[in-house]
Length: 123
Image (cartoon, rainbow, N blue to C red; front, top):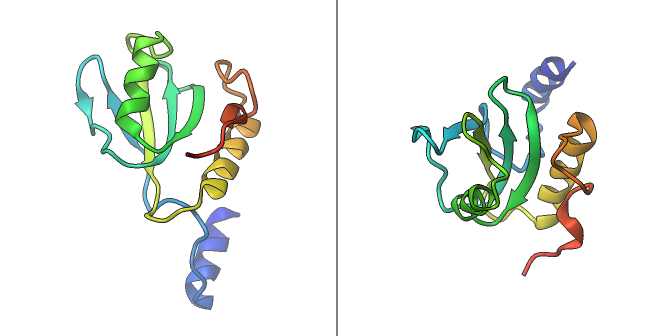
């Protein structure tokens, strides 16, 4: 159904309301330094185990900083990947938060102990 909606959107001239640009998420393995290292940007990220199953979903205003925090807290383990999408410039926090909550509700990653955001608001 998603493909049909996108095709219809092309013909109707509507644009995507996604907070991210087109394309698939980038993958980065911080232990082997393989993949595409995240830029100093805001975005959505996911920690995936070796089988590719989501373990944690989140949003951040600084992808590399958040990756380091997860490594220090041992929330990303050897063999796991940091999967991410960079947010479009000027994307409102509320839109990123909505995306995060939808991903958590859909995939139920086991390391997300709350429904996303942890009650925080942007600074």
